[in-house]
Image 1: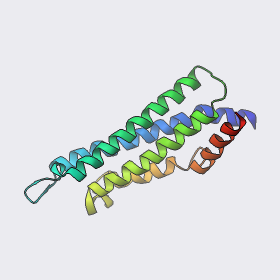
Image 2 (image 1 turned 90 degrees about the horizontal axis):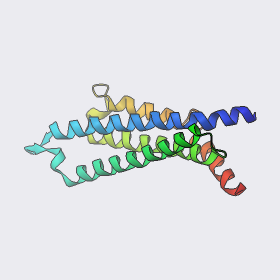
Image 3 (image 1 turned 90 degrees about the vertical axis):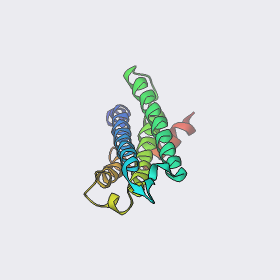
Image 4 (image 1 turned 120 degrees about the vertical axis):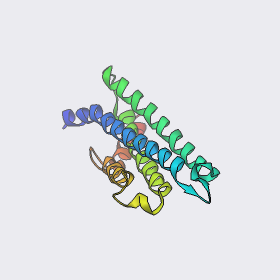
Length: 150
């Protein structure tokens, strides 16, 4: 059992990396779409609300990317007590991926929910990163146990 749990310490960052990639793909697709989609004679990218959504999406992705890099670097160095940082990286990055892909679907409007655009698939792909290698609820248990152990 101990070996299995240690293995997860090294695989969780890979799920985080997958989640960051999904989120980045959704952001890239959303940026392209809002620059092209016109409403009332101008691109919807000109709307401040859309700009704020894009900024928030990018900010969350960068934070998740950094956390995944830190977790992967610590695992690569063979540092002890990886449970908290690797669980946090997987949990945070997959939650960010779900938030970002949901926002991307919203930016695409009704079309974002159809198979005509890739963001609906990205949203489904983001969801599975919250589930496999241990659900995010399990990751929170791993983190809290590490914190309480001191």
